[in-house]
Image 1: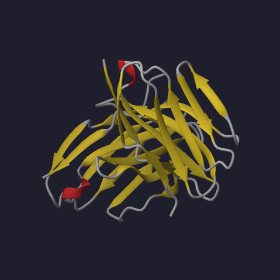
Image 2: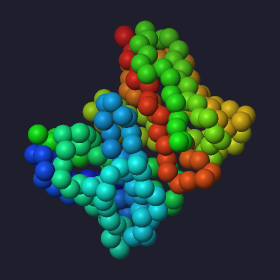
Image 3: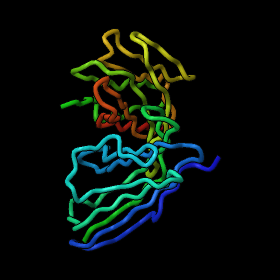
Length: 112
Length: 111
């Protein structure tokens, strides 16, 4: 089976812009979670989707949003980018909620 | 809030030495998972522990889940250069569905 794929892999944006990141889960997986990874804060949970419904949300401002489509693919959007949003954004899929997470390679976002 | 504390943050060992990282939670965990992230890579699942007092082994790696399901450890015997990376524990709590990650322990191995 193909692994989790994320696009784009690298992104440079400027403050105030918005960005959309995409994640395709492993075939058959219905749960997709998003994490932000920074050197200072480690891996922080953003949100989790299952069957197109947001099941859990982390402690991030409303500028961070996401959605899941009927084919389980997911997108996350960050509006009004800030310098502190520079991070590696990881997507992970699992077959069910609260199961083993299979991570994608991540999207490295740099905000200038 | 729900937090998983992991220590040490860094560990430098000579090849062949043992290595241990510890995770601690103030409240009971439903289960705990361990992940390894190589430099420049993404976290890769190693194992999941569910039962109180559970011990699992994978070759040179030994994973333990505490009796109270509040702490866990990963022990590597006779480290090799291929063990280099950051090891994360991550737990689910009974009350919520979020997977909470520890800060990770970065292991470097000197040949």
